[in-house]
Length: 313
Ligand code: HEC
Ligand code: HEC
Image (cartoon, rainbow, N blue to C red; front, side, top):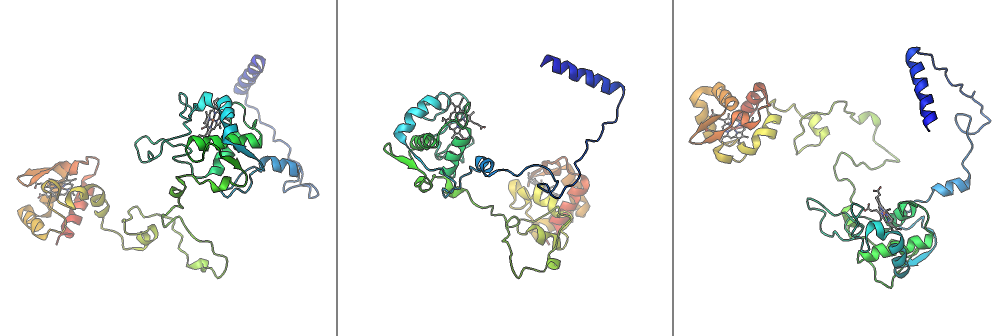
């Protein structure tokens, strides 16, 4: 190791002194009779593919044949898992907790376990099969993996102590949190695939610029097509609406024509702008400079004032 390092250092030093042109590695000439697009490599054998192709679907497809009971799993777990995950799945030190945590997902510190968080039993089998025990992955047989999987389910009160898990019944063990894994509901991310009579590609609008201000009531595409928003709308929505929408602390409400007419009579829109920038305190209440958002420019505040006043006539 040391010799290797010093050799590398020498190379580095030489490299610094006299930059040399790295020779381009020779690329094999294209040979259509050889395998693959680039003309080199060998096809993966069925056996090699089988070694990689071990994923399991939630419906159980891909599971190896076999079975293992909670009872068998108990001693295996004690022997090979408990030193890290704890005898009850409570987790030793900072090793992951495997059980409990029901009802904590909305807490500040949720406890995400197989029982409280994971969606599918197939993932549990698959994960243990690929990775555990941590220091000897892939050392368990298929039956042993069924047994420890059954035991982790048992630690989560999902099966009884006389239960045996098999490739046939694994998919029927549903985890409590499965229903909370849902397709992304945002309208802009889902699209059904079209295979026939599809929309004319020319009629589809591709946006190269996403509008910076998208009101909650619109999709991005609608906002892009809509009339440009009032220049003060975005600032108002983000910074002023918290007080002026409902009249917090005596703030005159947007849309309250009488209140805004009275204020306008004092010194016109210019004075309203100055007061919004500098802050204003009266019997009505106190507004800090720029509503408390010092990073806003004077122009942004003035535009928001115009939006407020125009929206209140
Ligand atoms: C030497 C310590 C150690 C041993 C022994 C061990 N694990 Fe783990 N286990 C870990 C670590 C560390 C992780 C987290 C790995 C990561 O996040 O990359 C983990 C993660 C897991 C998880 C996923 C937890 C989650 O919610 O993300 C499961 C399930 C699991 N182990 C089961 C087992 C089983 C079953 C055994 C016994 C066959 C076992 N482990 C043995 C250290 C261990
Ligand atoms: C923390 C609450 C709060 C926020 C945030 C806030 N305001 Fe106000 N605003 C008030 C209150 C309270 C008043 C009434 C003050 C008074 O008359 O003494 C007021 C008054 C005003 C007035 C009337 C000034 C006058 O001369 O009569 C304008 C204009 C105004 N705000 C604009 C804005 C704008 C623009 C924003 C956003 C950049 C904003 N406000 C953010 C609370 C707020």
